[in-house]
Image 1: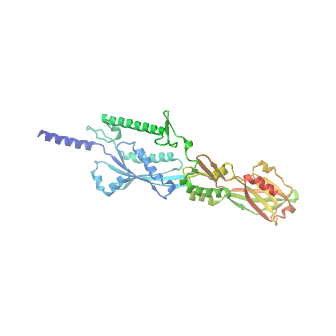
Image 2: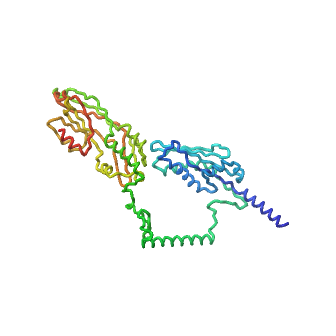
Length: 430
């Protein structure tokens, strides 16, 4: 009889211990919803969920569950009735979208048992600042979760817990297994080195990290970034076409009719005023955003910077050389022509002192320093940057010209000439 009474007492004690244990919190974290299905940022769906998991892992008595766990509880909601009294089941729903280089995130905290919304937060950060996005997201989650974290109350009964901080010390058997595994791994590594030495396993891969005298080394010079990667050929072909258009013809120009006014101090000359407005073509940034899968984007007022790295692109040598030598830079040259198409006056807008020193007895030559390039390229060993400035440059070219010569003007022509060809181009005209 006594053994039966003891077993009943033990059973009741166990029930008391279980019910005296503080409730736990099941949190379901699933990938975030990419609202616009933006393929370039699709990786953030899982990344945001992993950020939340990493943050909540630090909390005791929180049990993290993923998409599979949510599907199980939704398929069989009776599982909620079999949980420890006081246990809560919360779902974190998130969605995000990108606008230029900004990421907008919104999250909801849902009680699965009733589908009530317990809280929501919205935040906005830079696409290029993943650390900042992580901080904003985890701070928002912590603020919403704080009221629902299990509070541990003191009890006269010992508390059963599954928290990672209460893990028992490893047994001798576990230690023996760990030691045996370490010895086995060391033997395998030694055999590998011996096989490489005698040529049984070929040569060591220079692209992998290796240990040298207690120091792990990764030789970047052996990387294949300088070589063409077949998987990058498609992106590269698109980039080459877009860059060729950017380098050859990026500007939109508005030319107004020149104004001819007599010089009050010399009635034999006209004071000529020629208004010109320079800006980038409106289609350029749209083409860059829509057709070219860039690696990063930064916008600061009117300045937009696109980043392309070698993980997605090959940088053809001719493109790199053109950028490094500045062959993409061009200078506006304006010609005032007579009926036969011969220049009567030439206006060149450049800060080059050599060009400013040129002169001509045949045509009126006037240098200016008003135009400023609105596009710039930078290429390095790892990445390429394309900077675009979306502003207007209104210029009014003013100069004097003899009345007889000015009366022959019948046409105005503006051409962008590559900077490295400017001197030879003007020499033929002058």
